[in-house]
View (cartoon, rainbow, N blue to C red):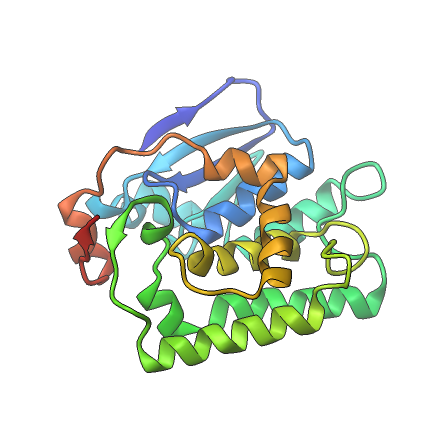
Length: 236
């Protein structure tokens, strides 16, 4: 593990990964920024197996990245981290991560869970490494194309006519849906303009831009491909 940035006075520590491409680190980083939380970042070198070391694995229980430390309590899984931050830094004093109305909050949780568990072929064909590093990619496979169509259909059903946040005011699901849509947008795959406009507006939010523009290694380490199981595309 290595320090990303640290004040030494922060309330929280976010354990991230070194390429800054994880959608789950993205979610937790955005959540912390939106909550105006003071936090340090420690980068976990996944390709070296640092998350399997007892110093990381034992306190986080599952050894997953991201994890969040708060006063010695370590929590993994980005969805659990978001819920924890909502409870420990509650609205209205802090920005809401989830909609206030029960039905909207349940729908947001539904979409966030779906983004984490479905669209597998799309996530394989347009892995997050292709969002931040340029490669010559093959067209979407048949299943990935069907996944893309399902993603767009869900977005078209939920995005309001003014292309604003899904539930009237911003919530974390907006950032997560925009991230998934940018797997297509940043790789020049077709997305209907109304959906693309919504995704671009969410991508421009300061907390999202901070992650998108974060410094990254100039190239992807060769060991990443074996570690991740992602087929290595040609460099553009």
